[in-house]
Amino acid sequence: MSWPKKKSAQSSSTPEEQQKKDLSTPAIVAIMLAAVVVIGVGLWLMVG
Image (cartoon, rainbow, N blue to C red; front, side, top):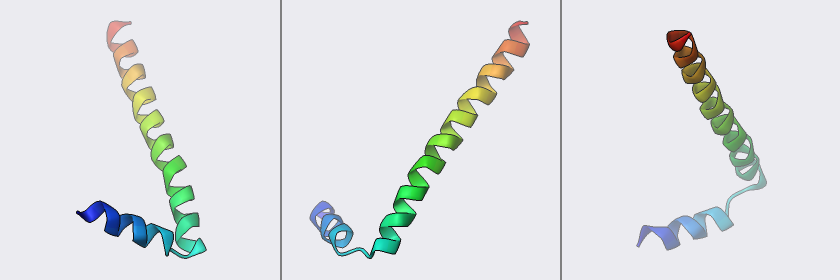
C-alpha cells in the first residue's frame, strides 16, 4: 500500500527535487558502467 503514497509524493514534488532525480540516475548508471569496466579489466589482466 506504499506505492500510491510514493506516487502522490512524486507528483507533488518540486522541480528542484525532479532535477535531483534526473541528475542522480545518470550518476548511478555511470557508477555501474565504471564497475563493469573495472571488473572487465581485472579479468582481462588475470587471463592475460
